[in-house]
Length: 121
Image 1: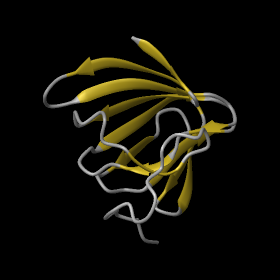
Image 2: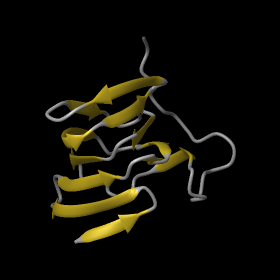
Image 3: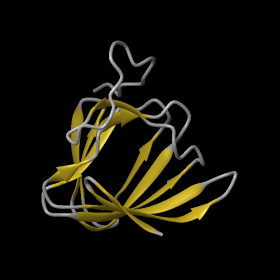
């Protein structure tokens, strides 16, 4: 089922006790919250458009066919200047989101958010 989000939409098309899969659509000029997951690990595949990913303080730009792996604990934000569609395949912890910043007024914990991996270099 396609579900609207503040940044676009997502379609959960597979969910088991071992994995989940979604299609994410990020509208031009929008982005997800800056976040990490305590348990959830994700791998993303860009289908079309351009993904701008902030990962551990670095900015990566990915196009169709390019992939990004985000281990649990990785601080990240996904966005697009022109719009993007991507596949997200992850472990099944769909509600495992710790927000650090959010453009849309969604809850962000006050104070320390706990351990998070920040990629170096």
